[in-house]
Image (cartoon, rainbow, N blue to C red):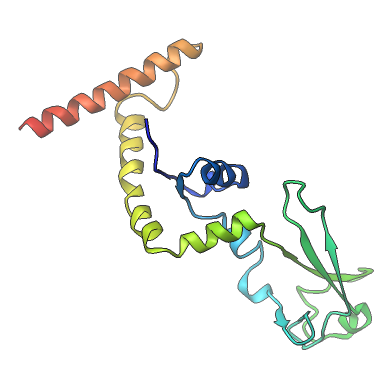
Length: 185
């Protein structure tokens, strides 16, 4: 079977799947996990980047005093740039509520560096091909829901891999038979 495109949800966008699809010339239509594209913080918690200084600036206008890269390159996990702020300024800051924790010895702001695979996938997400194919995903979800809720494919009714395979084959056979009968009408 020749596979050109795989459509899935964000759970399928891990780096190994992206590498596999690229190696095997498969288009992977799956949105990157939001923690990769936007990070784990809310919009109001984000700092602004000053391009001229190459440093982040907090809401109060205080610039980071140094930057450090964390994580090893090529270890499977993305590296991060960690920006360190002057803790004495943070202690007296008007915006310290929710930003500075009383008694903290330092204040940092970390930004994940996207791998080449994640950057390429993020660019692919913006393409017309990706947007067109991702609109078809609801059909797959509807079929999965039908299999689970109407044809017993949600919980294994017997133990063992053979029993599960048989249950899956029967559920899929039933759904396909229903589809064939409907198309014949």
